[in-house]
Length: 201
Image 1 (cartoon, rainbow, N blue to C red):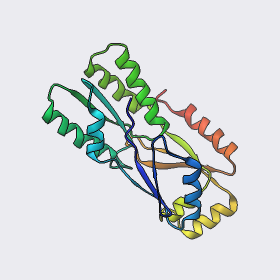
Image 2: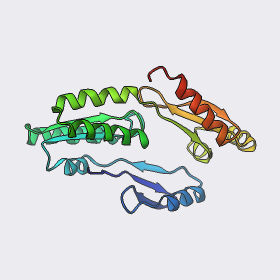
Image 3: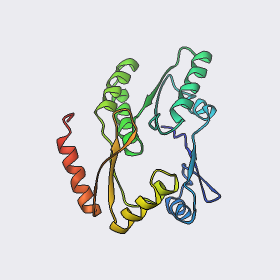
């Protein structure tokens, strides 16, 4: 397993999502900044370096609709296939992030470890992407306001009411709103209801 990290910039500081990453420092920096944080996806060369040393390479990326990571990984795949056409490489668009990526990576690992051929691992893991639904609660709306996705008036109203937004992903991997609640507890209860109503499971 090889991790190819993104870079996050906030309030003049740079955070690399590797073993040096400190979430508390990033959150503090984001609170201090008047601007929304920005991210930079890994360059194709970073992916190409990570692909070395294996005959079968499975790559899981952030949803392609939110990050250029998938495109960089695909560019690296093309470069590797030109140099070493005998190596198998597949880049999965997770259509998710965070835990969704981890679930897909674990599925790929289980399938590959079971001895399935490369093509069958890809086919079965691809079905896992379609069967996965990402849901989460936004406890704080500051970054939505900072990056222009929430107007000042909306931010003031939702902040005053302490509304928690229930968010999720579309099948294509785009972030969407599922609802709202007045507390995290209520929001989590609504997430359970959404999961129970999901006819894919």
